[in-house]
Length: 213
Image (cartoon, rainbow, N blue to C red; front, top):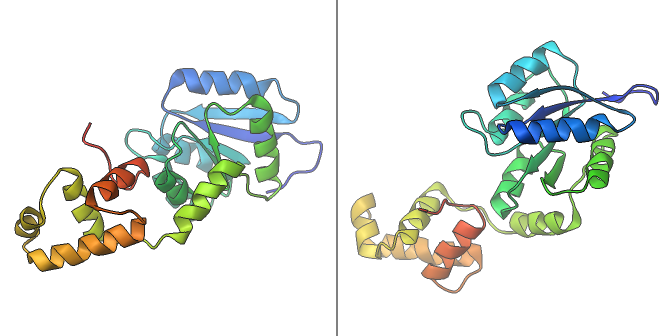
């Protein structure tokens, strides 16, 4: 809900790192027009807080144990609480950005964002606008233009990343070598890469699949 000019913007910080929460609270607490009304270490705790307290903008980490940021965003679409959400993360993989925006985030910032930009983002999102920095917006646009991979294609990508051959993938999934080959051709086309090795590398870099490290 948009407030009148005299009321501060109420902010909730959600991050599993105590130092990050303390640093953000300290930094934002010095800004006129902003009030940090709480901070939580996880998604479940954040949703309970939002049921009790009025919050305008949530600064939400993506990678948290238990209920992650995407889960929180999805839960908020089914909740009576209607804060606007800025994802604040260390990650800028294409898939992370895409999934966060698809799940309902109105802003996306990296944790090394300057204080000035963060304050501007909070004000912009609170006023009803989106706030996505230009270089992140370009990556989001690129990701949205690519066709989505099917569940089977993602499964095969994970096996490609482990170095499995078409025959080994077919045996594991109980499908023919020819069917695997067709899936691999589709994956290469959708990811706009030149071969299976590049497909696996690109998928890891973009956050579509996890690395084994």
